[in-house]
Image (tube, rainbow, N blue to C red; front, side, top):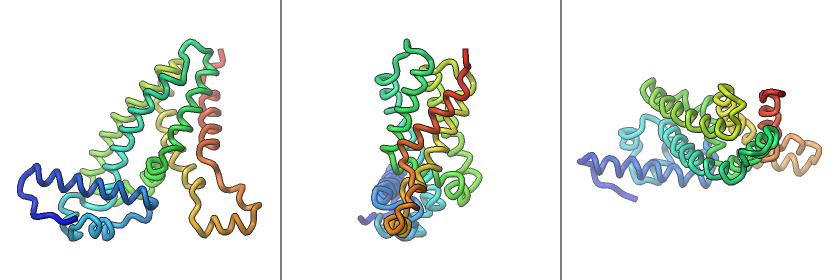
Length: 221
């Protein structure tokens, strides 16, 4: 892929979109930690300084993708909850159904969970105040959207729905690291099967954590 110099706002937007699309394609091939600015520049057909004219760092690229993937997931989650949670069922049944849907939906989105896991420890650290503040403002909107979805099916949560929504994303990121071990660890598990108990299946472990959280914070009466 090669580009001529972008001279108009439309051309600059096309260039930004191409960088984001290429980074997204790379995430289908490799974990977040393996995505480098040098390789992204090479694949998109731009010199590294030119990529930095559109994004100040590879973390800035990945934060924008994270927000995009999160929006997509929340749009799909709304339909999944509507189809899978009967609002007329008892509270505990609705909680278990919601936990099942959330865990299944997130476990199908490996890249999103990987980005969740890198967000606080990596992605938010090599960006300017302007970039991270813009990302956090967008994140507040996504958190509000998810909170409203959870409250629709579990109104008993009240204000705790916001914290539960945030914890769901944090848990998905943390647990995903244990569900996708690197090749060296996979080899260790194969050589010593007892060690494989540290390998967590994302869907099952996330469902257990979310179910326990919901049933723990919902009112008893």
